[in-house]
Image 1 (spheres, rainbow, N blue to C red):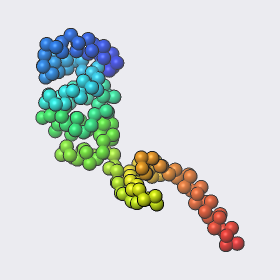
Image 2 (image 1 turned 120 degrees about the vertical axis):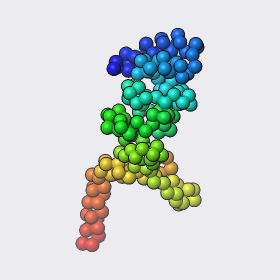
Image 3 (image 1 turned 60 degrees about the horizontal axis):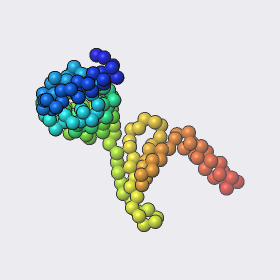
Image 4 (image 1 turned 180 degrees about the vertical axis):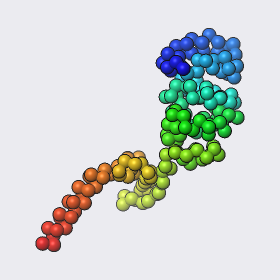
Length: 178
């Protein structure tokens, strides 16, 4: 297939000429050869149309568009073809899309897809100022540290920095007992 940037101009020209004469489903069927150049907004506009996009068409969309779609949007786009997503799970674009989704969202599809992001764990605590603080920790980040979000601020511990703090505490505790 042609590169998405090469398909954008033909798609936009085709779209502007034809769209006023056809329903969204008819236009979708006529424009399938050009969909690799379709914008994310256009692809999202197809979600409520019950088009049941086939997986060959889906996997030939602009990768940036596919990676920007939510689980709910993909479910709406694929419609009756949703079960076919399982057979495409090893295709690179689909694999990357799966890795960008939360596993709990993927589970709602009922396709037994695996490889999604770990779900955030949220706990609420009272802070010393008397306001509630929300802490979100994402497990399995694979970065050698853990990431925590407190009141909207992301804090990530680096393994090297943690070791440095440990050494400082160790040295300080040795000085106190000497």
